Image 1 (tube, one colour):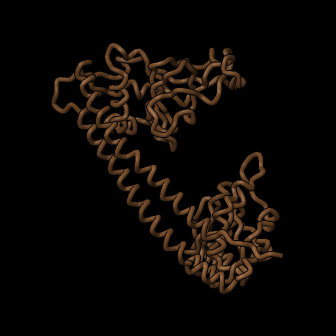
Image 2 (cartoon, helix red, strand yellow):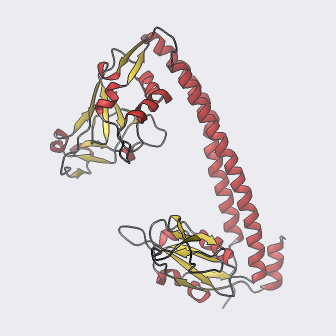
Length: 385
């Protein structure tokens, strides 16, 4: 029998009382901060700390609950703070330990309470009706101590795994770049525009109606259709009409699609026939000069990515245009040499992925382990009425 069980048997032998959240805390609305002066008091919104001011809305420990936006991002604050109107703060009554409430609310996944059709949102009325366990304060403090320790250990392990994963990525990038640099060699170098057809995508305006039946439309390729870390475009969530496709830019299997804004400069190889909007560039007709896998590695190399970055416009949003990509000078080794390099990079890629694949899985496992023990600690037998 662990210490929590001993305390519950001693202090709450008949079970734990549950009560409405509105009976345990007072939920308060945030307010605008722009009339306040600069200072060291953090101002919280639903995304976290926004700025700092000279006045506090509350100076006691509190749980902050997003009213709009990221409803699952709770904050425990034990220093003076201010909140804006996208996040509630709570004035905790004397029956609750603030951090115990924070840990318990995290188990409820408040985002599931959202009923809004647009931006996710919560109301005070919904929150006030939540049923919250109220174990004796000594039990609450003991649980908080255990979860604080476990949270710290979990954070340290995650940091170590993240560092190891980043080291693997850096190792792979170094090896790739060393194979694609060709210093002092006789390898031909030519502007990419002389070796391939590079054109910007086009968006029908207004965009033609999206089609849900697969046989009726043409795949409409967007950033969200490509999984993180993926090399290929294999399917799309939306399709456009045949008429819309005539006003757009078609790409076919084997063509490259290069992001010119979001996920800036990232290349993908299409495995489907589809259309791209003006946030993409297409690269085709390169087969005489490049093996597709070699061109993929080349476009991802640090040297070309740096060239892209140096040549973009000066606006706040990085944006590649077709002329910029055409002007980038690239090495053109013989096809046999390209095959040799691709073989080496593919083998190294497999090695790194095998070593790295377990690291994200381990991160997920650590989070699941933490959530399992947190939820177990915060599950109580309710006192019989």
